[in-house]
Length: 203
Image (cartoon, rainbow, N blue to C red; front, top):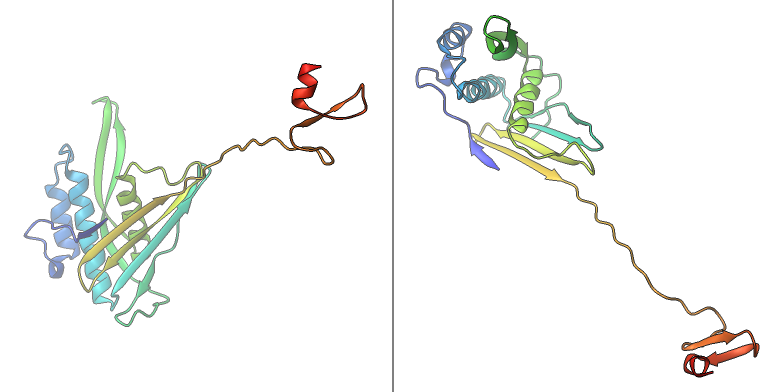
């Protein structure tokens, strides 16, 4: 599945993703809106893309795999315009974080939204975890599976693929003629020799 970077509010452009703008965005959110998580995810995706591009990163990849009721996400990798891996990317960014707390007064779970500063790699991992959770594909259980998230900052394309392993088993039955016996014959214990099946049945 490939998509373009998800559009966000028109007032929030790549060059405006500073802390004050993000704070204003958080304050304007209606946490009771069913689409609020999608808006937050779209914004965080833009924040990651903007910060990475400004840092000279051209592509972000993150893979994940699992099986037997457990799975894990790998470390994100960053590539420059030449496709060379960039080591030691030390960059802190602000993203919008969502937590849920149970309200005793309201007797329901309430979404709590706040700004959070974290490393770019951690922000990428949390964003991908959320994106993968939106797809009901059980890649971590039974025979397992794997996937890859990729963000191409040159084209603005985001790609997510999830593969599931399926191991098939079957049972094959075949009758084997014992060594020394001819096909269609059986050993006659009375005569002490091989006799044809038809001959035995007619005896």
